[in-house]
Image (tube, rainbow, N blue to C red; front, side):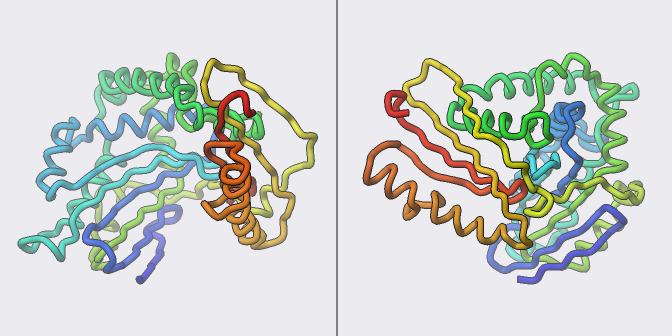
Length: 331
């Protein structure tokens, strides 16, 4: 495996991973901005709207046809939280050129479409297409409302919300329903232009690659050439930046009519030595990281106190979350 990293422009970085292990190539774009309460809903909405169409491919049908012509390439996008940053992500995966029946510049075509979706949206009357905006607002509202349907995930999100109350990481990645009424096609597009002009952009390419050809295709892409240099306010989270003040234990109980109770325990790690995250990661593996862990073997197997018992380590926040699921009478 060969990994190369280089700046296309200040604030825009290209990462290339050349590997023979797969028969497909994956191209992705990550747009990173600091998490804020006023923008979190807009970011989630933008990801959904951009996938609906571009100036060159103004509908999802046309995008799908292009993907079918590229040997059934697959495209997806979404949003994630990474530390105190909100990440808008776009993926396009297709067959490696080495396995095509005839020689084609499939990688360059992937880059062209992916950057077109990300950086060249369909605009009507000085804003995003209103039909797309209104439709995606309804979809996003349903996603936010459905958060409570998955009780296992909901309990985990509630623990994060309480642990990081009034802090960026406590925000829900899909935003809030009360924000949707204030978003219009015009003001969302104005926000998008500001976001693209200032955000941190990382472009990842992995697979069987001609790395020089990929680099030239991205550098010469007209959408990339339109972008200015920037000094993005990306927030770096690690064990030294995430020193948490010691606080009293806090218990939060949400009562619902469910057959299985969920218990989530959030633990702050008060160790700030450099590279202590590696120790914490090993500790988490022993605690609840797998079928041989202490939680699984003792709480689930020996004592039969829970259907599931595991833990996860969030490196960017230097925290461990223990998660148990069982009948309400046991919790």
